[in-house]
Length: 354
Image 1 (spheres, rainbow, N blue to C red):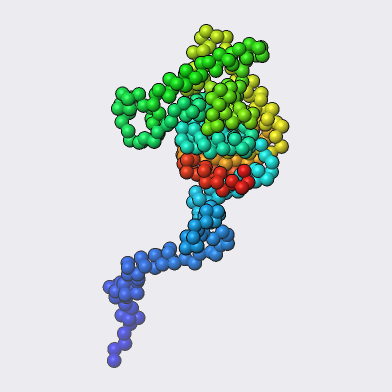
Image 2 (image 1 turned 30 degrees about the vertical axis):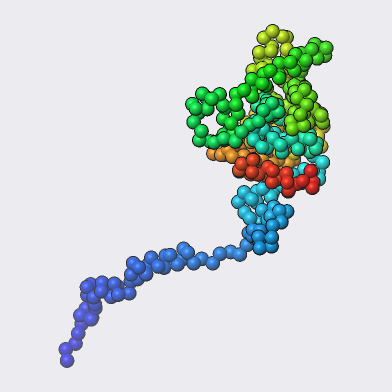
């Protein structure tokens, strides 16, 4: 029997390749293994609030529905957090600022704001010129539900102004001018007696006194002597009326004196909280001045504005901490949503506390 050499016993390259292909996982097997490693990972167990909504099989209990927001997630949980923070403001005896834009008054939120001022649930308000004029105008004539998609040119031909899906006949503003001019004349005479310019809330209070209508925000601000400041008073219909009146009267409004009054309130406050509806100047004027007292202790903001464009209106409350407008340990929340839906729920939930 012939003796084979070691070289002859070795597998050749073709045989090695064939053997390797037999033992190597197929592409399908490799994909399955990758998927299993990626998908079937044992997650770490965590503790916390269990996500759960209201069980309607128990019937309709509005208090419990609202309580259920806290465990619902998304903006519902932010809404519940806002209610909790406002409760904290009340319990802490904080001075409460209310900042709101004019469209809040254009909408049915006017009645919610009126309720808070009527019942002395806020201490100081900051709004825009529109936030005052539209309150008075609604006492002179109704605003009507319209359509976001209404054609602008057709409305213009009919002398109807559109605010979102709310229609306002231009005749309302004609009536406003007719109402305002005699009020400004009376204010002018008071200014001459005082020997110094008026503050913006002097105008708000006088408008409220003269409209003498319990549906009005301005009326209850005057009645309860709650200051309503208008840092942008020269804007809008009220601003144009002031300008026209000043053309033949030495009529002066001192917005810097406003700031002195705001500063006094701020520095005397042991605790301060803010309810901010919308954005713009009414929001900023509240948070800006509070940085001089080392920031707000509490803040709740409701806004639809996005944060990514860097606007003040879209800035979340957490951004205000970097400026010192909110204290580092302030309790705060931003709810992203429509004030007309969310704010009445907040006030309803707090009705027993407010």
